Each structure stands twice: as structure tokens, then as C-alpha cells.
Length: 368
Ligand SMILES: Nc1ncnc2c1ncn2[C@@H]1O[C@H](COP(=O)(O)OP(=O)(O)OP(=O)(O)O)[C@@H](O)[C@H]1O
Ligand SMILES: [Mg+2]
Image (cartoon, rainbow, N blue to C red):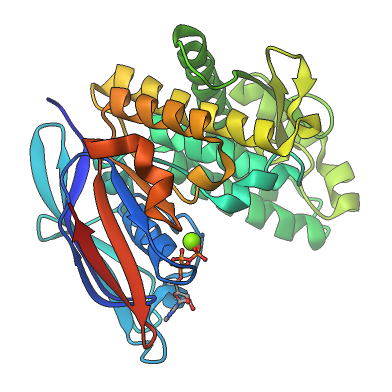
């Protein structure tokens, strides 16, 4: 089978883990332990095998084990597209993190091509009720899972926009200063927007195609004002036209950085923000599972799935439904919970790890 899995994981000086070895195979991994034991730290470590700052979105230096703070290192074997790659990612001192694949320095985008990953973490429980930024980030992570180049596009766009905003603040009026930056923003910005739309289409299709115990979410993109220009040329023109208004505001008011994602509980027609806490969580799980199914359909293998404390909010039936879907998907899902009873419905279909903390140091024990 064309599977994707992280095995032979080692964590060195990574948060509460001084030296931890985790021997697992491609089956789901259930991790339990007391509060503060170091469970989420393991999921965060796994998330560093995908591009970006990981699931807690921290600077590399914050992940270094304290008090030593000498940096950290993670290693693992990634089975992807029928090959096994040695992956190493580390940060020395306060430096940004680096990646090596099969012993050679690699860009983070390369990591994204090897390891598609999706995750759900407790702070996302407030996704539907808080600001647009969190929803945009969720949307972009989903998009990135389909299009590994999406992170580079976002960097290009942000960089050009920062420079344009600097000109706006300095009240530069001369058009020729803006032309190249706006052309760059139009190019990457339209690609960002069209990738997002394609990603939403795939989620929608995957939700419609599936028999699932979780409710479907309808997702629509909206601009905080006006419309997103449809083509690259329209966007470049809109930026040029908006210069004086943007100058008054001191920032760029048009573009994909002003997009919000509106969600609706499809069966009820109720906006996600008005749904109950449990319903909001179920919608997110539904989207994560749809994302995973769509990736499996496209690439032949499901992504690695990280579910931090997902079991805690679900009743036993929903929990069983979630585990059944994960097993049907065949994904290496890394899940955490405070006690082993939360994983009872998984039975022998997963690998069980216990994490204990002693003297500020996490220890992992594999249970059979
Ligand atoms: N940079 C660091 N150096 C050393 N320890 C750290 C660092 N960052 C976090 N920790 C410690 O790691 C411990 C475990 O954190 P983690 O979030 O993994 O716990 P958890 O097992 O998920 O707990 P919970 O059930 O409460 O979610 C915490 O006690 C925290 O103080
Ligand atoms: Mg935790």
C-alpha cells in the first residue's frame, strides 16, 4: 500500500523531552498521560515534519528545552510514495529551524511534498467565533495540504505587501514605485485565492461523497469589504486604483489577506458561529476528515493526522465513529487524551503510548 507514516521518531532537547525514542508503525497512535506529561509536545514534534512553525506556531527557539536552551533536534523516517526518507529537523541556539532529507539540506516546501499533514488542536475550538485571522489560517493550512507551493506564494505575497505598505505610510505618490510590487502581489495573490477556492471545492466534494457520522459544513469565502478581483490583471488594477484610499488607511485594503471563511452547518442551515460547542467541534472534525479523504483520493495515501485532545469533547458514540473513520482511512493518526479509556473504542487497531513526567522530563512507554 502507498502509505504515509512517520516512524523511528526521536526528540532531543525538544520542550519537556530530553531524549525520547518513539517506535511506532503506520497504524494510529494513541497517547495518554496526565496534564503536563508531554503529550502535546509529541504531536508538536510530529507537526515539525511538515512546513512552517508547527501546530503551536512557535518560534524555533521557544521549542528548545529549558533551562539549557541550546536548541533541539528531531529525527524520523518518513515513508512516503513507496520510499523511506531519513528526515532531520533542528534548530541550533536561537537560529531558525533547518531541514535535512536523506542527509541533504532541504527547503521546507520539499517536506510539504513528502508529508501531507492535517491537524486539530484545542485552540481551534474557538475558530468559528473568533476573528477572521484564525479561519484564514485554517483555510491556508488546508490549501497547503493540497498545494505544497502555497506557503511560498504566501511568503511572496506578504513580502511585497509589506513593502507596499511601507511606501503607503511614507506617502509615496509616484506610481512607478508601486508597479513592480503590485504586479508581484497580483501574481501571488490571485494564485493564493484560486488555490483556496480549489481546496474548498475538494473539501465540499469529499464531504458530499462520504457516509459519515459527522455533519457537513458549507464553506464560503468572503472579503471583509468589496469583492476579490477575479483575475491577476483585475487585481493589479484594483491595487492601483486603491492607492490613495490605502494611503489614508496606512495599509492595503484589497486582496486575499482580507478574506474570511464563513461556515454553515449544512443540514440545519445554521451559521457555524451560532452552533453549540459540540456541533462546532463536530464541524471541524468533519472538515479535517474530508481533507484527509480528499488527499487520499488525490495522492493514493491519506495524510498524517494530528488530533490533540479530540476525544475529550466527544461522547462515546461520536468517538467510536471518529475512530472507525480514521481506521477506514488508514491514516497514521496521532491522538492524545488524559486516560487510556478515551481510546477504548479503538481496541487493538492502534498503538498505545503512555507519557509520564518526572523532574521536568517526559518519558514515553509503549504499551501493548
Ligand atoms: N521549552 C520547554 N522546555 C521545557 N519544558 C517545557 C518547554 N515548553 C513546555 N514545557 C513543558 O512541557 C510540559 C508538557 O507539555 P504538554 O503540552 O505536552 O503537556 P500535555 O501532556 O499535552 O498536557 P495536557 O493534558 O495538559 O494537555 C509542560 O509542563 C511544560 O511546562
Ligand atoms: Mg496537551
